[in-house]
Image (cartoon, rainbow, N blue to C red; front, side, top):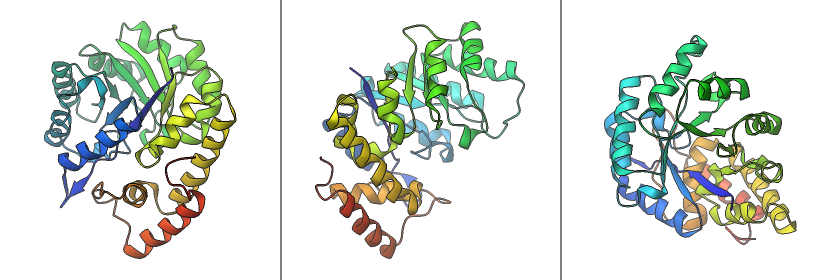
Length: 288
């Protein structure tokens, strides 16, 4: 079975994380068939949170750690290690780490030491998102990280290139998992032999994304992928970081809070326009 992971939005209220709303939203996603909740990623605005806030988010899931992947990477390795150790106490499914994004020209051996140090605490997924981090963790780099003895078990590869994902898959062992990051490429990636998807649109169309992952090789999956493409095209027009929050309320009638500045929430006029456009694409809501 291919895995569906959703990088969950972090609900903010008055500039602070709302763990109550985060938990409500995450429980809904799990009921819709999501396999794992990915905390503190880029969709969750994790890099904007301090250590105390990220620990608060983690602690909200200590009763269901087997459903959690928590992103621990950042610009302060000591803080990353503290968060990784706390995650290890709860025995979460895994941790993940993005590169130290503010320093995109670190020597290669420093980057390898960074990932190795984090993975020594707990099994780790690499988080590759070159557009936001300035680093491209390609197949050659993955091999070097693994050769260092790092306890790295997979990668979320958010690049618009299936060949990039496949080269990693082909150059690692059978237990190393490669997950497709871009939602529009999920069907093609799974048909090519990848292990699953980390889909941001799962925040608001988890049912359609679950159908896509389960039916990637038939006409039902084709229809689901087409809907994912159409709706994400609409969402991007309104600023994906903000629109993700509005989309939860539009399609599921509960609040996922607001983003944190400098990501600003959509205004009432924008929300209304977004709702009208989305409902033309998805007249049945989160179903085929």
